[in-house]
Each structure stands twice: as C-alpha cells, then as structure tokens.
Amino acid sequence: MKIAAVDVVVTSPGRNFVTLRITTEDGITGLGDATLNGRELAVEAYLREHVVPLLIGRDAHDIEDTWQYLYRGAYWRRGPVTMAAIAAVDTALWDIKARVAGMPLYQLLGGACRVGALAYGHASGRDLPELFDSIRLHLELGFRAIRVQTGIPGLDTVYGVAASAAGGGDRYDYEPARAGVLPVEESWDTRAYLRHVPSVFEAVRAEFGPELPLLHDGHHRMTPIEAARLGKSLEPYDLFWLEDATPGEDQAALRLIRQHTTTPLAIGEVFNSIHDYTTLLSERLIDYVRSAVTHTGGVTGLKKVLDFAAVYGIKSGMHGPTDISPVGMAAALHLDLAVHNFGIQEYMRHTPATLEVFRTSYTFVDGLLHPSDTPGLGVELDLDAAERFPYRPAYLPVNRLADGTLHDW
Ligand code: KDG
Ligand code: MG
Image (cartoon, rainbow, N blue to C red; front, side, top):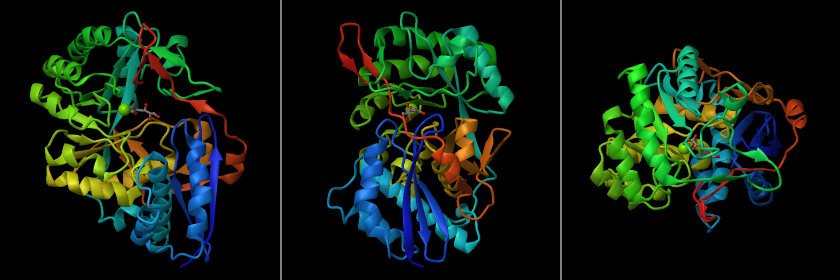
C-alpha cells in the first residue's frame, strides 16, 4: 500500500495548527498533528522540504521502519521540530492502518483497558471568587478532576489564568499564544507566587472538600529548592500532581524536589524523546509522564516512553491544551484507552471554529473522554474550512522579573 501523496496543511481557526495528510495509492487518507505552538512554520518547512519527498512510494504499513528511517536516517536526532514532524507522519500512518483494518486505533494498540479516560479541565481566576466560579463551571461541565491556576497579588497577568475572565466572557478557553509580530511580555515574581498559592489551595479545599482531584502547573518557573518548598507547603491539600515545577531540561532538579516532598510530580510537556526521561523514570523521580503524542514522535514514540514508565509504576498524564490539535487529541485518547498505566488526560475544549476545520468523533461524558469507535483516529480534516483560516504569526509570551531579567515562561 504505497504512499501516493502527502500534504502539509497550516490553518488558523482561532489559533495555528499544522496537520499532515498522507494519501495512499488506493485513496486511503491518514492525519497527523505537527503543531508546535509559536514555531509552526519551522515544522511545516521541515516536513515539506525534508520529509514529504522521502515518503512518496514508501509502504504505508511500515510504521516502525518509517519511524526509524526518519529518526536514525536524519543523523540529527531529537528536538521539538524533528520529533513533531516524525509524530505527524507516525500518527497519520497509524490512522491509515486502523482505517484499513476497519477498527478504531485503540484496538490495534491492544484494545481498551478502561471505559474512558479521566480528564482534567482548567479552572482559573484572578481572585478566589472568580476561581470558585470557574471550578463550579467545570464541575457543571462534568469534570471530575480540576487544574487550579490563580492570579498573584502584584502581578498583572499570570500563566493559566484566563484573560477573558476579566471581561466576564467565556472563562474556559485559555489561549496564551497571541497573534502579533512580537511576543507579549509578562512579569514574574516567584516569592509572591510561593506566598500566595498555598492559601489558594487551602481555600479551595475548604470550599470544595477533600475528594475532588486538584492539579497545579508551576510552568517551569521555580528553582529546585523553591519547588521543594512549594511541594511541601501543598502537602496538606493533597494534590493529584504538581506539574513542571522546574525547567524541564534539568532532570537532576527533580531529585532534590523529591527529597523534600511527597506531593506527586509531573513533567514532560516540552520533552520530545524517551532519552529525556531515562533518569526521571529509572530513579522514580516523577509520578506522571506529561508528553503529548504530537511532540514525542507520535504514537510509536510515546508508547515506548509509557511502556518504560510502566516498569517503574509511573503513569501517563498526556499534555492536552488547545495547541494540541483535535488530531493530536484523538491520537492521545486512543493511547489513553490502550495503555495499562494510564493516569489522567488534560482536556481543554477546542473552539467551534477549530471544530469546523477538524470534524471530531471523540466524546466527553461524565468526566471521561472516549475516542469513539470510528475506524482510524476518528477525525476528518475539512480542507475548504481550513483554507478560510489562513496562518497568522503568533507567539507564546515571554516573562521578565521586576529588574528586566528574562525568566522562564
Ligand atoms: O504551548 C504552550 C502550552 O502548551 C502550555 O503552556 C500549556 O503548560 C501547559 C499545559 O499544561 O497545558
Ligand atoms: Mg503545563
């Protein structure tokens, strides 16, 4: 079953997405997500110039061999651009194989281990009343696990706090990447953050009780000792996890945090290879793997990471903000259902415009996501709709301390 055509589609229905569409000689198509938020055109060029020409004429069934051909064959390995490109090819080939088999992808991955994937949603507020409203809204939407992000006194904008909350509009769809020729600049103060966050979790537990699983994202902003202090101060509030406490590339940092706190730790949304995890997994320094199918070499790449994690009893917690396209989200859901060591799935609903371009079949019922039993991934790309939303440059914000020093965002 030879590959006859490969298209790279860049579209911006409210935010940018890069999608790969592979077509076989008998007209079967498969989709893969290659979106790298704020650096989309680098992946588009990598695919168009260096990957598409290598795919034409290859057997679409040879998924592992194609993965190795693009990974080992490039000589220059890993990195977010390369691994997002490989992910898109890999996911599209799995989509094709499952469509040909007439089965939903999770069946080819071993079948379902559960009836659905527990999802967590993003609640946020500039202050406690706004945050409580947002948590209530999420509970009404059906979420059974909730990420809590809060405004910090003295800081104008803070990661994860929905901008639209200010206008009283839709508080749900938090999108940090803003259209423009330059990134927006935000300000940051770790001491103010460390002073405030424990009091917010204390208030949330007092209002919503002990049962509700609560998560929090530190978004790479702390030093190891600051993160250790936060983890320790959050212990009374029984977090499901503290995510990305320190910058991702420093695996040894997690060793120090671990020595000081029993708050469960999650990391990996900026990782792209199993080699980013070797110390973290083999030394049991984390509890959840945050990688997305989209950024970690696809279903093939992430399945290897999760199987490695399973050896150490470490679970999945796949990245699922709106910059993971519906194609990437569907791929995650098939894997969520099929791996034994599933933990939780992040879920932000895409906008109606995005869902016009990507016709999905996955469902969210009573807090659980299900990829659907449609053969393949269960997502169709509407090319006419995609054309109506041309690419717009957009960047993630950057962060500065009060004295102007650039800090991790
Ligand atoms: O593109 C950046 C986002 O994917 C990231 O900021 C979202 O940290 C994130 C999360 O946990 O969803
Ligand atoms: Mg995160």
